[in-house]
Length: 306
Image 1 (tube, rainbow, N blue to C red):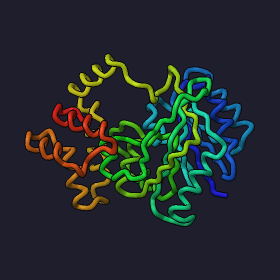
Image 2: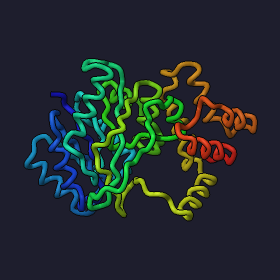
Image 3: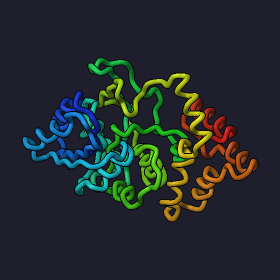
Image 4: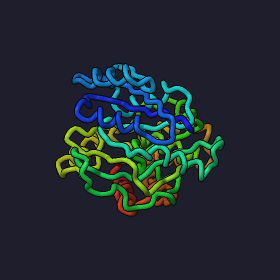
C-alpha cells in the first residue's frame, strides 16, 4: 500500500476537528500519516489533538505562531516526512473512506505507479451544511481540459481535494514565495507549468460550510465586493493574480521556457503603460477556463485590479 502524508492546519477548530480526524484515520487501502500543525488556537483544539496523538502513533503534531492558512499549509509541506503522496486537509470537513485511494488510483492509472513526473490530483466536492446535509456539488464544469495559463487567472483547485506526489512536493518546497494568496492557488500554478494535473469530477469529500470558514463556497455580498474593490485599488497586495504571477516568476523563471517567461511577464508588467495593458487584455493565451471568470478578468485588467 502507498503512504499518504495528510497535512492538516488547525485554528480554533474544536467544534468539528474530531469528526475530521476520525474520517482521515478511517481511509481505506492506503497507509495514512497525519501531520497536524496548529496555527495559534485559543480554544480546545490543541488538547483535542493531543488526546488523539496519545492514542494513535500515525498522528504527529506541532504548534507554532499564527501564519494564516496559506503559509501554514506550506510550512506543513516543508516539515512533512518523505511519503509517496501528500494531501492537504481542512479541519472542518468530512472525508469519505475512499477519498485518498481514489486519488492514488487515478494518478497511477494516468502516470504509472513509479512515475517521476510531478503530478497533482484534485476533484469535485460535495457542499454540505454544518450538519453534513448535502447542498450541491461544487463544480459543474470538467476541468480536465484546462490550459496552464488559466491557473494565473482562475484557481480551479480546492486545496482539501489535492493529492500530490513526492516529485511535485519537492519542487514546491524548493522555493518559498515572499507573498502568498492561498496555498492551493500557488500549488496549482506551480503544477500547471512544471507538472501535470489530474481532475476528477467525482467527489469524495463533504465540504462543510459554516460561519467560521476561512475560505468557503459562499457567494460574497454586495458590500463585501465593494470593499474588495477598494482594497485592490489602494493596495496591490489585494490583487491576487498579479501577486501570484510576480512570485511565481521570481521563484521559477529559470525553470520556464522563453514563451512562458514572456507571457507571465505580461501580467506582471501590465500596469507600466497603457500599451502593456492592451497587450494583456487581448492576449488570449492567458485566459480563464470559464467564460464568466475570463470576462471578469478582462474587466479587471482595464480597471488595473487583477
